[in-house]
Length: 288
Ligand code: GDP
Image (cartoon, rainbow, N blue to C red; front, side):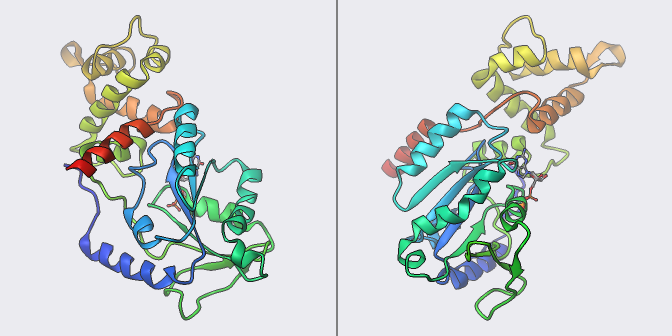
């Protein structure tokens, strides 16, 4: 299936590194992709962070379907020790409120004048670095490596006195099923590989026909809602991809157009997974 970099060696190393620092962390700031909150998780975060309050940032919400994002926010907020907000890198005011949210989640420390220690975690490309930079502002001091902090791991002091550290090592997504792999690829969270490119586009086209047909009609000026992925890609090819010799539709070009415009947000606000879908899946797994 998807060729994802889930090397056991890396996973083992990351697990050890996280376990080592987790004892000294009061709050986890988990960055998720609002378009695919479950598929953009790294399951180690919740496993190793058990009992540690977590703020889930549904990031890149400027690209996501706001109705579905709100459903995810409500769902996560119903879980114990969990706060969720929808956010994107342009929302400076909301970003600057995160340190206070962290304090609220650990009153036992913040009310007693003790430093609150937060760690920002998430899979590659989800927006952690951008978020850290936005959180740092100007007057920051790099605390540097301390004995308990993994070599190379950065720790910063924020204006409100909170200590913020970066994820130790790389936390890859764990691809549990076919949908998660394709969603990560369609959203651009994992990189293209030449062979699978067209398969990813087909998955995306199928999903868009089912969940967002009206966006397809508007973007590609279609006369009617396409019946399936093939019909949609052919229409895009016909209209935008140019025809190859012999009048054949260039399906690779059509796939490229669809994926680029989907990832870039030109197609509209799209979310790949819903709360109800996952509640059903989890219930099914529980029974099995
Ligand atoms: P990291 O690997 O988790 O540190 O991710 P980065 O901070 O490097 O971000 C990866 C890419 O996502 C960059 O191209 C960012 O500009 C982009 N990005 C980050 N946050 C957002 C966001 O809220 N909205 C959008 N549209 N793009 C974002």
